[in-house]
Length: 173
Image (tube, rainbow, N blue to C red; front, side, top):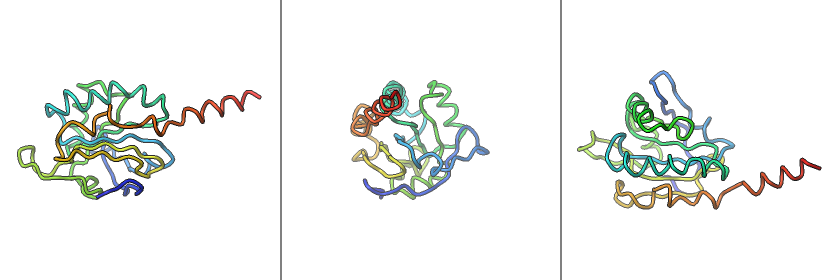
């Protein structure tokens, strides 16, 4: 299982369509990224609580130096695209599909939930800086809604807002 201080393995996820592969290394290198995962798109907890929490804090997270917010689920890209459209995530959160669960398996955060179709992702959130995991919150049973919520992620702790202000001040000289 991935741990704080480790780098994420490269992998390919899909956005909107199976012909739109996204290499994780392209998203994570030299960037501050919030990644969270859900057991399944359109499931009640994911749709009513988990995803909306990230949608509602996306602007604040980005103002604190987060370059990208990514939602990952072991679903096909069409399902993730439909869920993204229904929840108006464009410009806020990238909805990435891991259809075979390979990426989730590579980071050791998968589980078998036969009622949801078999292999799925545990519910988690993480803060990543330059592909290194700085914070990792995994729901104890894999599905609860507590530590992986947007409100629990300590993204302000990693803010580069202060550095940006210092750069702007030095550029005015």
